[in-house]
Amino acid sequence: MRVAQAEFVISNTDVAKCPRDPFPEYAFIGRSNVGKSSLINTLAGRKSLAKTSGRPGKTQLINHFKINKNWFLVDLPGYGYARTSKTTKKAFQKLITRYFEQRKQLVSAFVLVDIRHAPQNIDLEFMEWLGTNYIPFAIIFTKADKLKPNAINRNVTDYLAKMREGLWEEVPPHFVTSSLHKTGVEEVLYYIDQLNQEFKAAN
Ligand code: GDP
Image 1 (tube, rainbow, N blue to C red):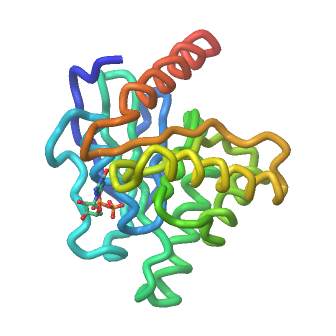
Image 2 (image 1 turned 30 degrees about the vertical axis):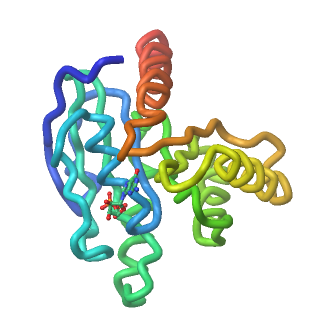
């Protein structure tokens, strides 16, 4: 899929105020600094559609972007920033829970994981929460340019093996990306395109 149009629609903290258009929706989420804003900008082919994080953990906003006038890309707040207060963490949990409970048009979440790191509990627990709530998701490994191909393969294999040790019998789809080199971007867009077509056929 070619992204011909990408526009910011609304930022808010209230799920009830998210756009009503019956478009298929895809939510991007991950730890602060994982490379989410960079990836969103790369996917959208824009330099600064999503704000790259100057102050991680500060903004707890749901950002809707309309792509090609027929689907929503959603930038959810980053989690796991070390200096976040307990109150902020609670607010984040509430916002995210509400988002996933209420956005019926959500087709898939994309959980972003830095390819350099060993599996972190905060990500694994979040994915388990998605799984137990029947929310479809795919994993996007970010910053692949930072590793050599062998290390990429090893880390991906280890990550999925760790998931299989947990509750996952079948691991979710996954993508290896680099915003710097624009790797994996076409694959993610193709995946979304396929899901958009399924969504259209079913609605
Ligand atoms: P966010 O907090 O998840 O939105 O992360 P950002 O997109 O703001 O990126 C966090 C940091 O990682 C920034 O310094 C980016 O330049 C860097 N970064 C993001 N994506 C990549 C990538 O694909 N490759 C490399 N080498 N650095 C990246």
